[in-house]
Length: 158
Image (cartoon, rainbow, N blue to C red; front, top):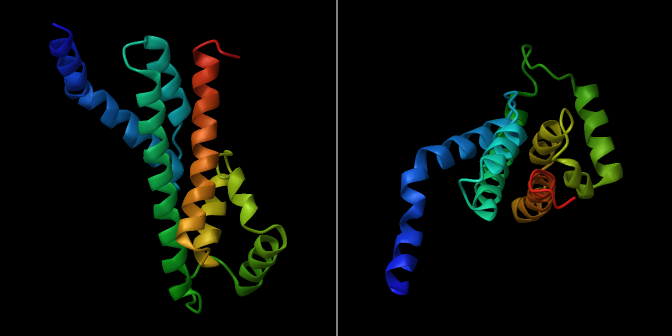
C-alpha cells in the first residue's frame, strides 16, 4: 500500500501540468521585456494550497531564470545593430551604461529580481559579455531568493 501511494504521488504532477505551465509562462514573461507579475501568480497558487510549495517555487524560478537568459542573449545580439541610424541607443548612452556596469560590476545582477531595473540589468550583462555561467549563478540566486521570500510571506513563515 505504501509503495502504491508513493507511485501515485510521483504522478501528481501530470494533472496539474496546465497550472504549472501557466506559472512557468508567467515567470518567464515577467523576466523578459514584457510587463508581467509572476509574484502574484505564485502567491495565489501558494495560497490555494493545492501544490507543493517547493515545486511552485522551483518552477517559477526556472522560468524566471530562463527569461533572464533570453535577455542576456538579446543583449549579445543587440550590439550588432549599434551603428545603424534606427538603433534606439546612442553610443554615448551605451558608454554610460558600460561605465556604470564596470563600476559596480557583475554583483549588480543580484538586483535582477527588482522591478524596473532588473530586466535592463540582464540585457546590459549580455551587451557587456558577462560570462554566461556567472550570469546564470548570480541571477539564479537573486530570482530564487525573491520567490522564496514570496513563498515565506504567503505561507506565513515571516
